[in-house]
Image 1: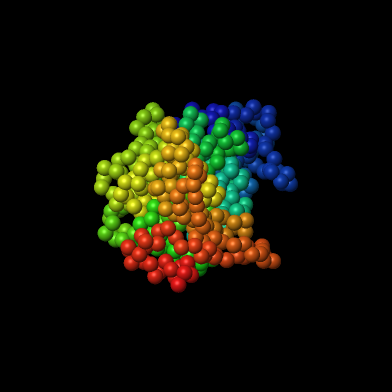
Image 2: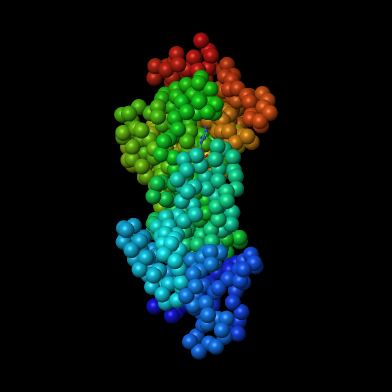
Length: 487
Ligand SMILES: Nc1ncnc2c1ncn2[C@@H]1O[C@H](COP(=O)(O)OP(=O)(O)OP(=O)(O)O)[C@@H](O)[C@H]1O
Ligand SMILES: [Mg+2]
């Protein structure tokens, strides 16, 4: 069954394949020295043909595997296993059956390779291999931790995490790139995709909803890069953001009024600044009776609203067909009698369709956009519309933007790792060719404490918002006045 093994499964670091390499060695070759070079270690396999007369090679037959070689043995067994079974197929079976299956095959490999393992080593090899096949191998402990927002794997030897806003290197390592690729493969197989040299970029999702991106060699030069945005079951609320100091209590009230009085809202921010989280928080104030349609690339939002239709884009299949873009979804939304449309991330020509929707009776629609300040958010939207090939003069485009969006909320991840809402800004109208903005609330930086924490405060600018009448219509005038200190 394993006779087809040859050079396949050669690792990148040259330390693998003790099993298969030993078998193909010339009889005169010396046994491998241990990594630390102190005690000579016995070869892990009976690598010699029966006719071998070399006493050094013939003798070590039934000796237990030295501890430091166990890892190499595992690599060898694992490589044999990959060749012997269809791991993607295995993932469809129950955990119990997979464990049994693997246990049988591994035992067979061990006996075919004439490896000698103690019972404990045998069990450990099977456990580790099952973890690789069933779970996420070395990533499992990180996945289990609640305090981690992102896991970033840069090749087999470097795994970073983001915890409490700070990025740090962990001690987690993969055996080699093959193990890392195998785990990437498992993740993407679960969503019916494939990652290899031919299609090296892939988005997927873990069972718990975490968002995953894989980019494999040769595009990722130092080994596969895997990025996981952990899905938190307990979504943060505006109250949580107030407790974290991301926004003041009054600021949170302002956001609540903007959402409840059906302003069209654009949430702007950099990567991982908390845009999606904020969008989710703002949807808490949508009236339960309103029909909401969400469009996302990978469903992350968790709306409490009972009347929600959740839509997700679809990448092209392996033949390059069947793609459903965000524009397709937003366009289709309009035929679904939505009251509000929520777009997880606006990043292309769908911006135009969303603005149209905002302008045509779907008040209270929202979306996020990647930008570093409210003004930049507007030029991003402008560029996205231009990308879609809409040949509108700049002025017409800006008028469209100014008449559709009411409020821009800016989220930022500051250099101390904290996430803050730095601006709540309103679009007032046009002056000549320029869209006019007015800040309603800003975060004013005051100082940096000794432990590197940024201190500052959220301050209302004292401006009466343009959406005042709208808030009054929804009975929220007093709350708005209070939030802005205008009483
Ligand atoms: N105000 C906050 N305080 C603390 N943690 C936060 C805050 N906002 C978001 N987070 C956490 O930060 C991480 C990233 O948040 P989120 O997914 O909302 O960012 P994003 O801007 O949408 O990222 P991306 O650009 O990748 O889409 C999540 O783990 C989230 O729980
Ligand atoms: Mg997001």
